Amino acid sequence: MLELVVFLGKTRQINFYNIDNNFYFVDLPGYGFSKMSKEEQVKSGIFIEDYLKSRKEIALVIFLIDIRHEPTENDRLMYKYIIDNGFPCLVIANKADKIAHTKVDNTVADLQNSLNPLKDLVFLPFSSEKKIYVDKTWEYIEKFI
Image (cartoon, rainbow, N blue to C red; front, top):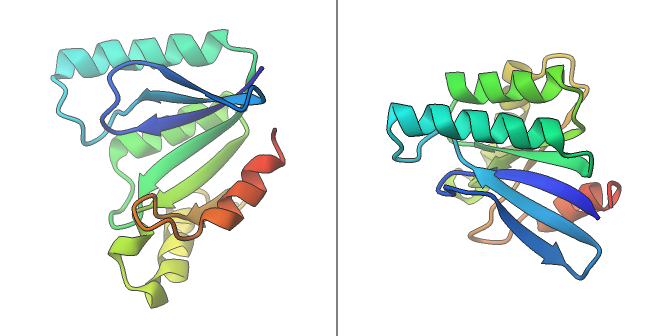
């Protein structure tokens, strides 16, 4: 079954969510603002890399970044790893409800310019809390299912 991989900040292990027996959302450990020791971060990084290298079922990596901040060094490293390894990728600028609605499009464009100046990947705003920008995100994800 196909897998859509997501990195969420508070996850400490791999969680598989079966979606209507059609595909899995796979929640991998976050690497950024979680309260892990340096040792835990290294172990988590190895764990994530082993998973990504071994899975043939990955249809899409959904890379979450916080719309309110410039990409961190860890964001840049993970983004580079995803691109260098040829994974199809959707970048989600999460927490779009935390900034003014009028600034969302420009902020997403700034994030894309920072990480992906070639603009060969899709960057979309999203808010899991307020459930805004959901339709466009699902439209894109459905292309990979």
